[in-house]
Amino acid sequence: MFAHASEEGYATPLEGIRQKTLTYGAKTLMTEFRLEAGRVLPLHRHPYEQTGYLVRGRLRLTVGQEQHDARPGDSWCIPPNVTHGAEILEDSVAIEVFAPPREDYLPGENR
Image 1: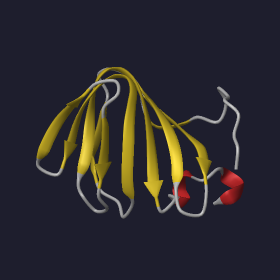
Image 2: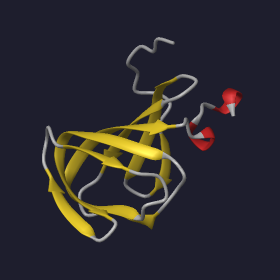
Image 3: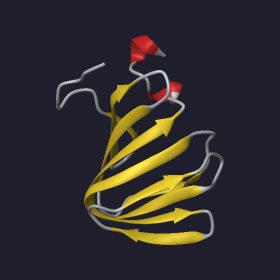
């Protein structure tokens, strides 16, 4: 699968949080998150491994019992079923890969 860059196709699961599935295959799914300063991604957990990279901005990630201040170029891997969340300290862009692919993130016709 190949996908061209586009400003279309973003969903807003929470106010100030925009997400778009960039591409996916049989074993992984890659998503871009555009995050507004001052917003919070509530603590949650899911059965997917989640690997991320901060392109721009600043986040305070909580993974399990640990907190990490993330800056551009930082990356992380969150194991399945580990509680995690984030405080958005600056307008940010993060790229995250989920394995296996999250069915709820697949484009409409592929769910």
